[in-house]
Amino acid sequence: MNEKTRQCIEEKIERILREFRFSSRSKEHPEECPNYPRQKPCHDIPAGELNCFFCVCPEYDNTREEGGCCISNPEGKWFYHPSHPKGRIWDCSDCDHPHREENVRKYLGALFGLINCEFKAYGTGIVKICENDSDFQDFSGYIDP
Image (tube, rainbow, N blue to C red; front, side, top):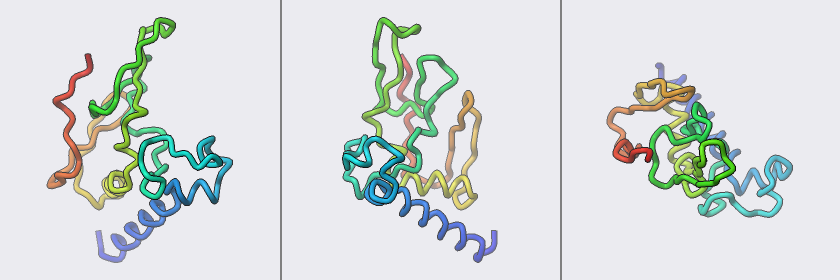
C-alpha cells in the first residue's frame, strides 16, 4: 500500500471515529438510538469515549439460537430464562470491547489492511488474529459453559 493510500484510509477512519462518538452522534442524530435523546450511554463508558460504530458487536455469535461471543470475552455472561428455547441467551451488556475507540480503530485498520491480521471464519462471523498487536486481548482461555 502506498503512503498516500494509507494516509487517506487513516483520515477516513478518524472521521468515522469522530462521527460515531456517542457525544457527537447523540446531538447530531438523536432519532437513531433511544439512548441518544436521554444522553444515557448504553455501556458504562464516559459519553466522550463511547463509540457507537459497532452498535451491534461484530464478535456476537449469531449462529446459535442462544447467541454467544466469538472471542469469549469474560465481560459477557449468560442470562438464564426458562421461556427461552435454549434456557439462556448471551448478554454482552457489560462488555465495552467493541465500543472503545481504540478497538474500533483497530477493527477498521485491520479491515482496510493497515494492520496485518489474519481473519478466520467462525460461524457467520470472523475472528481476527493480529501480529504484533498486544492491545488486542486474547480471551481464548475463557470457555463457553
